[in-house]
Image (cartoon, rainbow, N blue to C red):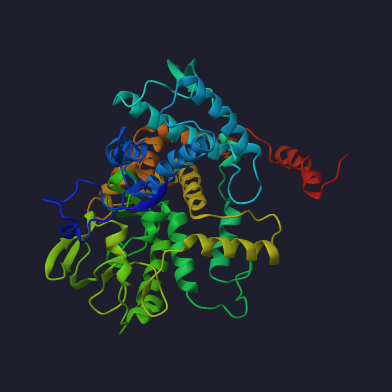
Amino acid sequence: MEQAFYSSEGWEDWGLEFKPVIPEGMVLVFDDDLRFEDEHGLRTSAIVNRWACELPTNGCPAANSWPSYVGAVRQWSEFGEEHGVGLFDGRERLKALLSAYAVYRSQGPIDGRQRFRVTTWNQHMTMLSTFYGWAIENGYTTALPFTYRQATAVFSGQRREVRRNSARRRQPKPHVTVKYLEDEFADLFHKGLARLRPDGSVEGYRGREMARNAAVGRFVFSSGPRKQEFSYLLACEVPKLPSRRSDVPVLVPLPEGITKGSKFRNTWIDYDALAELHNYLEFERAAAVQGSTWLPPRRWGEPLVVTEATARGGRVNGSWMSWETLGPAERRRLVAPGGGSMLLSVWGPGRPFTDWNTVFERASDRIRERYEPRFPHVTPHRGRHTFAMQTMAKLVRGYYERAARVVGEADDDAGLALYLKTTEPLLVLRDLLGHSSVLTTELYLNRLDTTRIFAELYRQVGEDVGLLDRSAVDEAAVEFEDDDNGEDR
């Protein structure tokens, strides 16, 4: 099977009466002869495509996940073809194929990308399970390659029966694999993005776009957006800087066109981080886009030229358009009234910039090589984890509640202050992260070792009220000094 992205451009020349009902950008598969039917009826490629076209309404609305889902089924089908087993073969043959596939993916050739890590294997099993469940429901097969067992799940005191796919492998506890940066390392990373040494001094030649990297990096750690959400945010969607500094954070709307699951939500940003972002907008970014003649490449589609722009929408190619419904593909084609991209992050002569994985990776490597050998690999999503931990710590310690109590009723941030004074910390974090339920937030926090937050709070309160002797705390800390030196006693 071959795999390609669908586009309806030029469909009028295909000899069809109506435009095909296929989601734009959907990943479809094709046989070598480009046929979907033969003397036996529908081919498996046609059935896979039907399933793919229903993904947006069957639990997979994110377009960037479609290639993974379709690719998992395609790779499984191709492996079956090598062994003479069809995608909808009998159960015994499918079970035997799955066993061979498991060995191939764990012990197969080391070249290429044949071997899967445990997490990747489990993701593929989930995707294949989704496909076969759909195929059975729609009458294409009655056979499953998987064996399921009943299990009892307990969460928050509630018990329920669940099915476990036996093909899934055991993997490390989630809290071992999901990481965040402690405050000291987070500060080191922010300086690294700005090409500053740990003491804050300038690190020789700083290069270009350092203000952009530092401002947007701090925005990520202060607000917790996903990579797609901050990469495709428009410059005009950045909230205004309040007239006075406040410890109450500023709301940051994240439009549905760029959020996971297309769900609008508000996150927030602290005043100092927002001030740094505005500094980048007013100086480095303004200089980059001024007089820019940049236009999106033809392969992206027609340029979307903006002649008027506000925080909520603008006139695009002569018609008024709201920003909130525009997805990443449309947003990167927007050309600002004064020239250059409309995206928050630009490079060179006003071109859109979205390669944040590389920026974070290079900053991490440089810090590790020059200053701190223990410094971890940092991705944009680790910034989201760090935001969650820092925010939860402040909420638990009452930092935001104390800040909210000094806000007057006539102040601009009075509404947010009331929210902070009357809402449980877990509910606040749920809204900021965009989780569908507080149970999701609980599970998420359990993977980030929140016991540290409460342990520190316990110690702090104990010292404040005199229940913990400072000398006892210092004595206990000495017991761990040798761990840092790698010695044993």
